[in-house]
Each structure stands twice: as C-alpha cells, then as structure tokens.
Amino acid sequence: DAKTTQPPSMDCAEGRAANLPCNHSTISGNEYVYWYRQIHSQGPQYIIHGLKNNETNEMASLIITEDRKSSTLILPHATLRDTAVYYCIVRVGGGGADGLTFGKGTHLIIQP
Amino acid sequence: TAGITQAPTSQILAAGRSMTLRCTQDMRHNAMYWYRQDLGLGLRLIHYSNTAGTTGKGEVPDGYSVSRANTDDFPLTLASAVPSQTSVYFCASSDPIRTEAFFGQGTRLTVV
Image 1 (cartoon, rainbow over the protein chains, first blue to last red):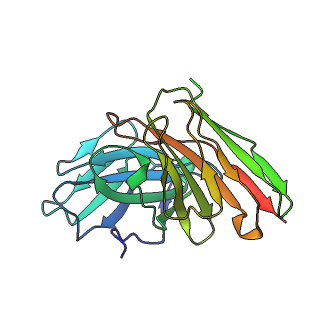
Image 2 (tube, rainbow over the protein chains, first blue to last red):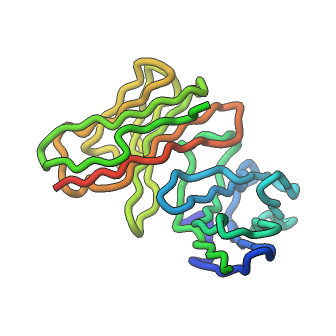
C-alpha cells in the first residue's frame, strides 16, 4: 500500500508560488515527511523534511497539517529550473535512503 | 566536494556479459545504496550497505551483487546481464546523523 498520495502532475506560472500537496493519512507518530525532487536525467535531490512543525529552508517551505495527515511543499517563487518530479516520502527519523520508498511523485511543470 | 561519483555514465552491454557499475563518495558516509529506475516503476532499492564490511538486500536484489570493502566505494556487479536489467542505476549515500541522502547522477545501462 502506498504511504503517500500525490497528484500526477501540476502546472505553475514562473514567478508564482508552487504548492504541491501530499496526503499521508496513515503516517505514524515517529515518521517524518521528506520531500525530494528529480530533475530530468539527474539523481534525486533532497529538499526539506519535517515531523509536525512547519519548516523552511533556502529551497522551500513545508506545511504539515495539525493532524499530520497531509502536507504541502511550497516553492515561493518558481523558476523554469524547478520543473521536476517531486516526491513526498514518509519514513522514520534519519536521512538514510534505505527507507526511502519513491512513489510516482508529482510532475511539476513551470510555465514561462 | 565531488559528492558521489558514478561510472560509467552510460553503457551498452551484450546479454550474458558481466559488468561492474562503480560508485565512490567522498563524504565519509557510512551508508550507501543502489537503486534502479524504470519508466512507470519509480526508484527501487537493489542493495544497501550500512557500514563498510556489511551489505543487505533491497526490494529487487536478484541478478545483482555488491561489496563494501571500504567506506568510499560501493560497486554493483551484474554477473550475467539480461535485457530486463536495462535501466538507469543510481547510487546514494547518507550519514545517520544527517537528514538527507545524496544521489549520484546515474548510470544508464542498456542490455541487448
């Protein structure tokens, strides 16, 4: 069973905020929400992660609902280079790739 | 720093031949991983190693072997390649203290 559900694709205008949703209704108390992205023909790249508080770094913001059953990744000012497949992953704490189960993600297309 | 280096970038291999995909990291990470990525199937874990001298099987280990003689290197060997092993292979590494996994740029392998 998939642990996360994401829309298969989304469009966003360049310069606007891109909001990528993720449902994880069966998340456990010790599981974090991680976001990675994969730009065409490149290896996946870590973006951000969180447990229950909202998080922000130089790349993005992560908003987690109070019940932790869903989250939203926000790219505040999307550029053409943000066109990629974005993966929402839940796993227990620690950054190792052993527990990274990649679903099909959301293909985000930034429109000029 | 170079991060993770994979070689070769791409390869065409005759069925039945053997091949070793190389992966080297310079971050002194304890854990390393091999994934394959196929269209429509996403990234799937082949083998992993939590520390030098130890290895483990992932989701799709059949037909592949790995070794971890030291911290930096984690080669993946196909003893007798078959067409179903045509894929893009990604190596990754992580440190238990860090929160992210780092991926290489991938090796595109075609078995004919």
